[in-house]
Amino acid sequence: RVAPALYQGLRSGVNRFQSASAPLSEVEDSVMENWIAAGIRPDYASIRCRHDLSVPGETEQDLVILGAGYVGNTRLIDNVEFSV
Image (tube, rainbow, N blue to C red; front, side):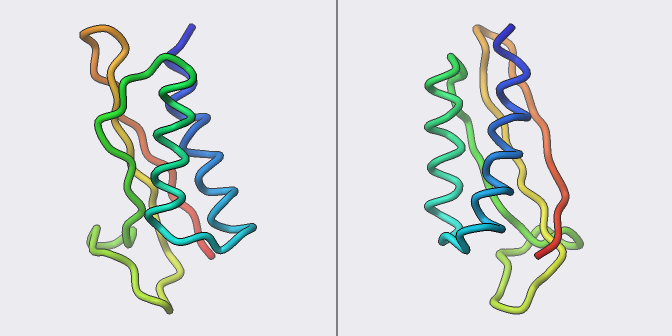
């Protein structure tokens, strides 16, 4: 029942980034806070350039948010591609 929260957290991060233009680190932190509240132990959440996974610059438009966390001993990973 907890596992879908990983994807939902990533989607909320995309929505927050697109609507509020929040700094990357703030969005990444909020995703991990959502996971903790849902019962997922975060490993990482990171917004990167879709093509080479580098840290995005001001003009980068094709992005991906990547994340991983643990439910018990099981490590879950997911990502969501998006554009700004």
